[in-house]
Amino acid sequence: MKRGFTLIEILVTISIIALLTMIGVTNFRVANQRARDGRRQGDLEQIKAALELYRTDEAEYPADITAGQTIESPTGTIYMNQVPTDPLSTQTYYYSSDGETYTLCAALELDLSGACGGASCGTGTPCNYQVTSPL
Image 1 (cartoon, rainbow, N blue to C red):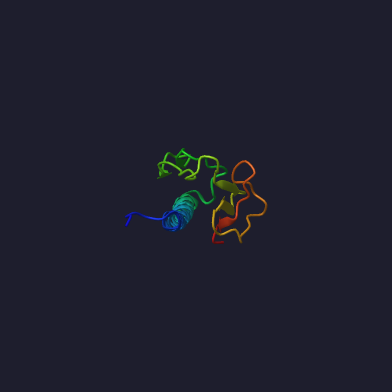
Image 2: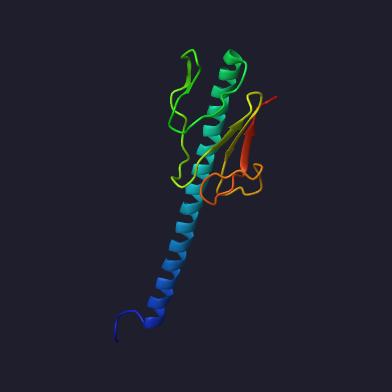
């Protein structure tokens, strides 16, 4: 009597392990996308708060903000030390203002339902999450 596994038993075991591995990798990828989307939404809310403080003091929104730079008034008051950047290096946050209102946009990875007036959040990446001034 020989002891050991048959070829069929080994193939079934390998197939089950491969299937479980694929499920785990997919769930990990989706969890990372959700985390990046949550960070984007949080970043835009922080920028929004800084912009509202700026408007309270200066009676208008800044004409332009740049990722990595400060949001600072002409008198030197700093409202945000460093404007956050998108978690993916290929994407950016979009900001537009006419002084009275502003539009702040990001490109979410999982929720593709929104729009941001055709704004681009990176090379070939349309923005789909928008925060606007409360007025």
